[in-house]
Amino acid sequence: MTDTATEELQRTLLDHIPHYAVLLHNDEVHSMDFVVESLLKSVPGLTQPEAIAVMLEAHQTGRGVVIVCPLEQAEHYRDRILSFTLGCSIERA
Image 1 (cartoon, rainbow, N blue to C red):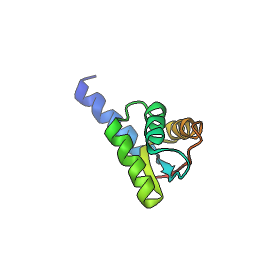
Image 2: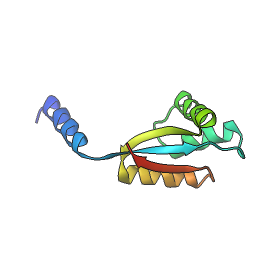
Image 3: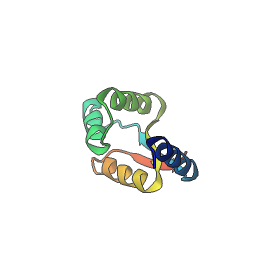
């Protein structure tokens, strides 16, 4: 299978798999630095600027989208974020 065919197959599969948003809730207890560090430890591949943006979105609007992904991954990331005693939930994207 060529690289192009493999990429097309992956895109087609992703179109049919429901996606869920992992939501960080505003936190009045922990410092902003703690929230950013917790996000970076919880979601591999999240960059520091992205984590800061999510933290600020949650701070300003009450919740911020951390990542959108399939349900099993979303549950995993939610659980990791909750382990830092931060408010987090998932909902269908």
